Amino acid sequence: MIKKLLFPIFLVLCIHAFAQTNIEGTPYTHFQIKLKNDTINFVIADTNLTVAKPLLLFCQGSLPIPLFIDFGKKDIWPVPLNNFNLDELNKNYHVAVISMPETPLIVEKYKLNSGFSYVTDTTDQYSYSTEFLKANHLENYVNRANKVLKFLKKQKWIESGKIVVAGHSQGAPIAKQIALENKTVTELGLFGVNPFGRLDQMIRTARLNAHLGKITWEEADSTMNGYYDEYKYTNEPDSLNQNPHLKTLKSFSKPYYDDLLKLNIPIYIAYGTEDRGADLCDLMPLFFIAQGKNNLTLKRYIHLDHNYFEVDKQGIPNYEMGHWEEVMLEFINWAK
View 1 (cartoon, one colour):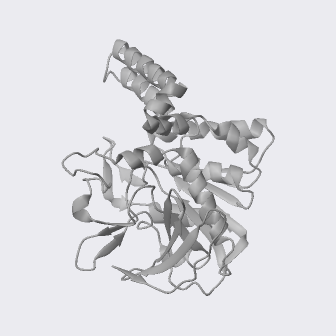
View 2 (cartoon, helix red, strand yellow):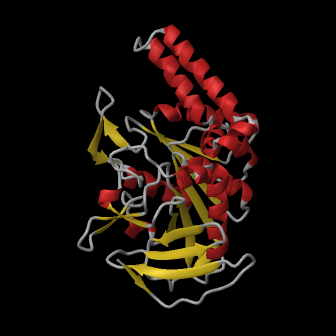
View 3 (spheres, helix red, strand yellow):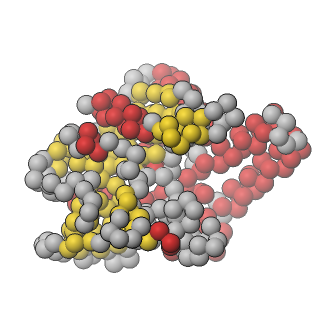
């Protein structure tokens, strides 16, 4: 349940309306920016906004997972920041996270699929709404984040001299682009990231499966050629006009290691060694060394997967042995 509080409404440019509420039963403050064609929900992981602190904006991964799940009887469970030690993070930062586009802030459990994504039909695990599929592209996420940062930097309880942006998985290229466009960002953290883009992982997976004998080389060849054709189709203007959801594949498949080289702020990359998508992070120091740049820190977490769970010899994650808390605290200590 959301408990509404009185809050002044400001009109800026195209009538931007800002509203603030507390989320009852949780240590979160909810903000809402209403635009002409969008409503941006985001939260601060604290209810005490009287103390000025730097900002840590965390960009979550893909899929329309709500910020909170309602299990009924006032049992509200936060999702994106649930694995973090917020007590420790809040000692030094106001921690913010933005809701996924076209996704309600709080969703009842029965409206979600097995992966906690908001869908139109729970009997179809992939029945994401048309509105979400159209909005699920890099440019939209960055545009929304920049509007949130613009708002937060004006608040007295935000120390604008230090703004840290971090992102995990799909959130990593979003965080990168925010730092590239927004010169007020002072540190950048990338977690479970593939600086060579989304399709790169699919192509390398097909090659690896052929090497391991899981598929034939003929099958791998056909699969990789299929990805080339798909990406070529995605990059045709008429295709995007007919299928706006293809913006997702196009925007997140572009390699961006060269963008990272344009940044002069400190950059922190962390990944689990069992995360196939992050394999090529090992090459990033070579690019920075070749450019004479020393603003990159690379941290490997041995035997951990994409979400920093321990895995066994068969590569199966142990969900009782997660290390997200440790990973984030080490990043925060680095950012200091």
